Image (cartoon, rainbow, N blue to C red):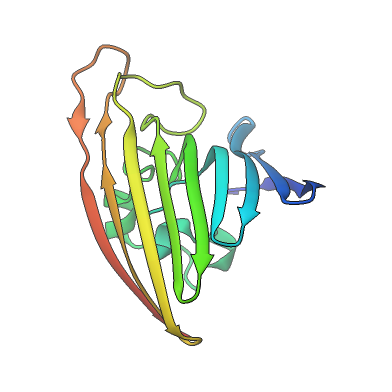
Length: 168
């Protein structure tokens, strides 16, 4: 069995949501642990461990994919997936929607899930999506950061850019 996950989410008080997800196959491992503060529709704050905002495919849940595996390009290049962290990292992110625009901008450790930062640098990720009509979404993502396999190891630069489109 490649994955068996237990998830708990809910609303604590108005505009404050949480989600905890554990993977029982990986001895168990904490996958998601986040708090969402929604101040206004155009401004929210997410803190914790969650998907890095980069590309439609990387941020889509496994249970919602149309195919059994993600593309090789996403596995090799998407932040968090390129280091085997299932597309997730620890950080803080601003989110929002206004008119036809949806955005995500965050700072992350860059070390992956369940790991403290292994270098002095913070990684930055941004994703913007435009929905000019209901059925069409186009967007782009940027990521800049450095990854160190362990504390004191020489960091590897991980700068990424991506485009996305979806017609429903």
